[in-house]
Image (cartoon, rainbow over all chains, first blue to last red; front, side, top):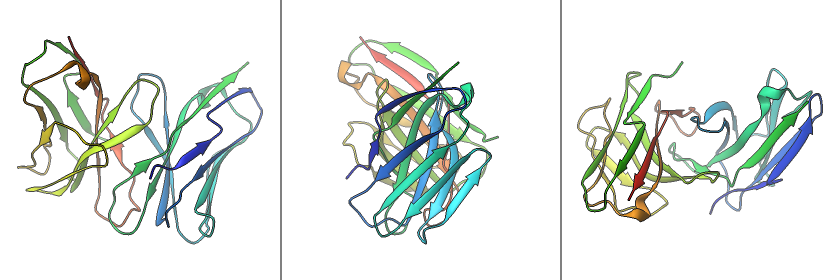
Length: 110
Length: 114
């Protein structure tokens, strides 16, 4: 089953914050986050392993709630360069096979 | 930077032709993947490989086939292309591990079947 992301789309003004959520119906081993700009390949942002850790990458951070099988991506003080489609990818059990979520389109405007 | 290459970047071809999409990586990664992505939509895994001579079908059924004779090379073949195969195909690779390694993507092949 494909993870469900919310919201589907969001428009921000530069400097505003956003939260993107990813929910799965299966027990998760890890959650990956990627950003894809129009016409380009997805680019890796971060991985969270089960254990409820929170990771940060400059002004982008994420958390993983193992009990709820949910992950959230936090974008603070958004910049124009943050625009793109964000995908979560989930791994269940062992292996490295990702199931990507439905995607969230984010647009940052001046 | 990841070193994974896909050719061609764009391909427009007629129905019934045999097509091979190339994917090569220079990182020595054991695991390789093929995804299909329609414009503005999510990525669907169609094939993956955990090493030489290992190939598995992904979550989305596909009429394409793959082979993994060398670690660095993971080509995808369509024996007889149809308009329903029109899409973008993305190749990716990752190190071994248990879901804790990032996937590195190529730039993709945009395929259009007339």
